[in-house]
Image (cartoon, rainbow, N blue to C red; front, side, top):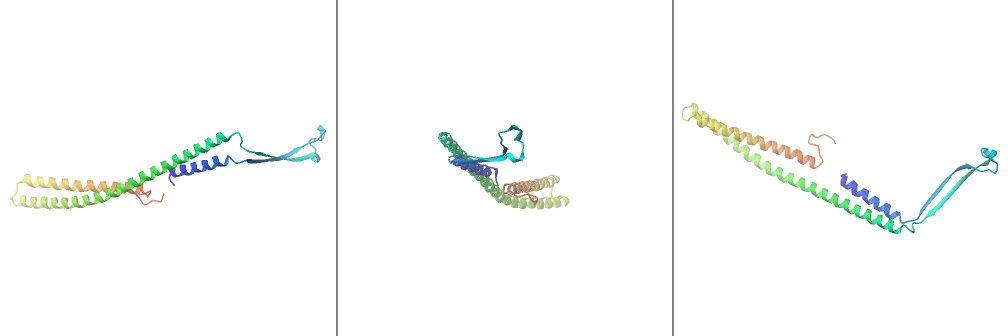
Length: 181
């Protein structure tokens, strides 16, 4: 349960308390005691008594204070539920953005992987041509640099995709390592 949801539920309980304060309250108290006309008989077992007292109170002169407390509890509850809705909407937006990023990064990863493979084939072909004396060393080295750059971009996109997946798992409340939380 989210902290915002707990706060909203707690505010609802405070509102119930504010409503119940309008009703009369009944209190019963009781306890043992001793009563005697003679001081020396006060601690004697034969003179022990039990007393029960009751009281009934009705909030007559506290009506304004109780209504204000009820309005305050309603306002706190409304604010707590508003905060909960805001938190939930932010969470949904975060998950939606991460899912869209996952799709976009998957497409980029596929295209950059194809570009890296093509660059590596071009570098291999260029190196073979250099070894046969058909191409200059500078061209072969430039093609190897391009292949290296393309492979580096492919690794970078792969890393971004993995980080995005971890963020998505966390946003969904899951553990990225499969651990039970």
